Amino acid sequence: MSEKENFIKLVNDNYTFKGESILLGGAILKNENLPGVFVNLPLKTMNRHGLIAGATGTGKTKTLQLIAEGLSSKSVPILMMDIKSDLSGIAKPGETNDKIIERHTKIGTPHTVAGFPVEFLTISNEKGSRLRATVSEFGPVLFSKMLELNDTQSGLVAMIFKYCDDKKLPLLDLKDFKKLLQYVSDEGKKEIESEYGKISTSSTGTILRKVIELEQQNADLFFGETSFEVEDLLKIDSEGKGIISMIRLTDIQNKPKLFSTFLLCLLVEIYNVYPEEGDLDQPKLVIFIDEAHLLFKEASKALLEQIETIIKLIRSKGVGIFFCTQNPTDIPESVLSQLGMKVQHALRVFTANDRKDLKLIAANYPESEFYKIEELLTSLGIGEAAVTVLNEKGNPTPLCATLLCAPASRMDVLSDQEIDEIVGKSKLTEKYNQVIDRESAYEILNSKLNSENNEQEVEKETDSSSVKKVQEKSTVEKVLTSTTARQVGRTVARELTRGLLGVLGIGGSTRRKKSSGWF
Image: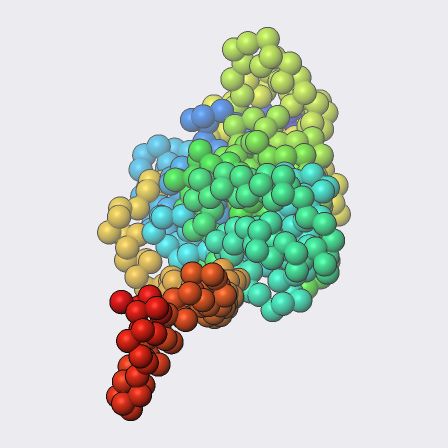
């Protein structure tokens, strides 16, 4: 059997599956396309996560689009992070041109066009249904990790959460949390220290600065109500297609902390809410994270550990996560080792560090008798990729160079008018875009402090009045007991007596008058 025949048999044996699968493209051997030798992705193992990587312009975003289309057509809901605003076209049918026809002839399958159901979501000022979560839903541990706090500061955060629980103070947004920080370090310090222990003013100051730093990345738009219900990600449209929930994130590329915080909160919520599923015939939900380096950029060690733990555990909920990035080295090793599917587009090698990275990346793929992996990874054309997936038994398939299918949907962005039309018809927009600012910790504490201040003012006025009376009495007493006062009093008394005696006709002698010294 020739090398080509051996290769075809290898591909057919390892990329043909019993259960449902998605067609990725056709196999390539030594720059030769092999029509009808298909490379498929099994749905059964898509909860084992995956990686789509490649240099700018090599076609990785279109690969992400292709896989999302395949999942949606198989009734699998999708959550997609649209960082660069170049994925919205999936909502509208694409076009077939000569280049696409030529590509699909080489693959051995016709090209069809179709649009897919999309819900636009946002955590910022982009158009779409608003995603929010309350501070309470984060919990003290995750909130502390997000702020990169030490053990002492984390303990103070835990105490604040406990105080809010005990006193029935809703902790909804960052405004509430900042008010609590100010309260425990000032007016409420004595009360709280008597019940919960000593409070470090320096710790509260540090935490407050961390919160303000988060606010500067517009995190106040994310924290609050109405909280997003992750069950709303599991929707199927009337035609049986999985709805693609697309979070538009174009205005937070320079806010990596907000992005990583939001995503971790979402993953934790999904993990907490969704029931255990084990290995299903197809995933319950697949999450695509484009520009995945933003998730790990500037994330603290504690936050990274939390993300890694969630990624390990969430697959038991029937949820798969696919990272899309320029270089696999953007992904921490502990996460990379968990990614069962790898679609590697061409790598560009310009420097000595690039060559080192190439060797490391090549080592992550199964050894192949048909390819020199380092050479393959640098010679792939646009829309070509080196592929390995997990088969239905959970084993890696052999490495296969693949000419990828073209997406069925539009390979361009939607217009503002088209986005407005989709957002306007969304039931989620009606549900989540109403701003709610109900009475919470901020308002309750302000009311309490105002009430206490008013009581103190009344007490001060009462005390002031009493003091004034005492002062007035004291003044009269001082006046009456002074020598001058006694003299004045006697003089007034004598004058009154003289006048009275005169009225009665009883007066003293002239001598007495003269001797008295009154005249």
